[in-house]
Length: 123
Image (cartoon, rainbow, N blue to C red; front, side):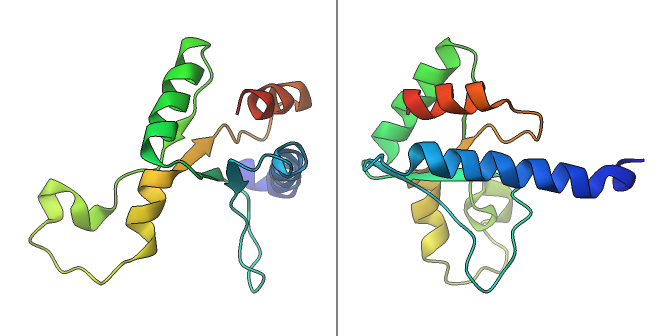
């Protein structure tokens, strides 16, 4: 049933991303992560890279949690999780840095412009 409305959902998710981009563009302490030019994103998730890293990330998570806005850290890399430490892994350089320096923003396709502005202003 959801496939019937996929184009509408993807369009709304792109709109959410573009609104974050608009409102966060002038903030020098963070950068909204965009997809590479050679690809086309479905905008399922909006990430911001924080200049001050892990301390800033943890502080923001607590701040947003107090006002019931769900921002999250990026999930820990699989190859660094306890059950997978003895498994095959590859030399991954950027992902561990992103775990420390990035934050997942609310990205629901039904997110209203006013909420995006509020989140952007709080950041």
